[in-house]
Image (cartoon, rainbow, N blue to C red; front, top):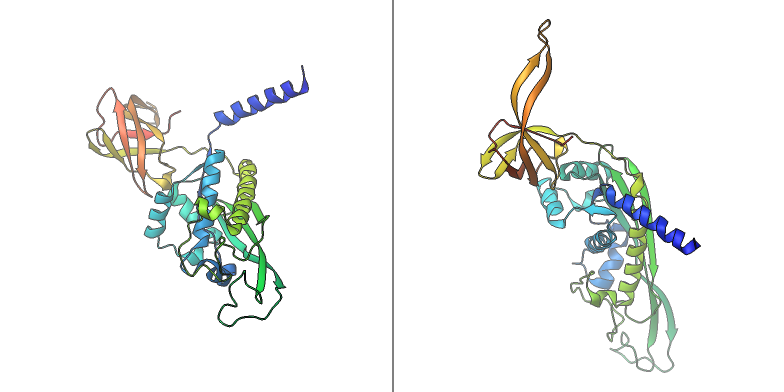
Length: 324
């Protein structure tokens, strides 16, 4: 068998094994950008949260690679608002782990932006500067500032249960092009004038700053994907009760604190009788009748909501638990 055929066969086997394993669930917090805040203000405007922009770009790449199951932004924002989680806590592992437990994810990714801006090279163009247009380029007598964009980011994967840092990753990008403006071919070497910048847009990606940012985030995402195996596999056994029934919708008395996650499918059973030891009266086992299952659609810390399907109607007090 040719070597290429062997390699292809191995790749298919590995893909099949990976596909059979449950993906680790992660959430990505907005990156901290305090280190580069003043530089960001000069380039893209004071109202632009580049930490959120980097986070959104990273989520896009992690979703595309398919190594992790990534929590949606809406669910994350809702929990952050409920917990009054401030931007100043972005890089704190203990706080991040607490948020992760509420979300019901296996790990949470926090990070920082350590470089975001220009690498200047200035050259003087012959002639005498003309008052009032010294910040323009393309005219004689003006100092022309040629710059490359440089962006550097780092991230940590935080274990939900222990707040332990399981892995670290980093990414650095440098634009291949240089120019007088980091955000396009406009006729000014100043900042962006405080306008909003959509870091996920093709317009931003086509700028030299966008080029460097894309490189850095792509490199970072690749390293995070490679570290998926560092996250522990935790077998969570859920057991609770049906607290309310409204047609095909059940409310359960267990939530993220008990390990319930959106998408879980739990068995719904009803206790028929208890078997006790006739000598001691000790409970030996419970005989249950399986009714159906509930697919969890919403979850908070102490409760969850799901859609029920089964041969018999569920009722308050029925048992819900992880399938065996």
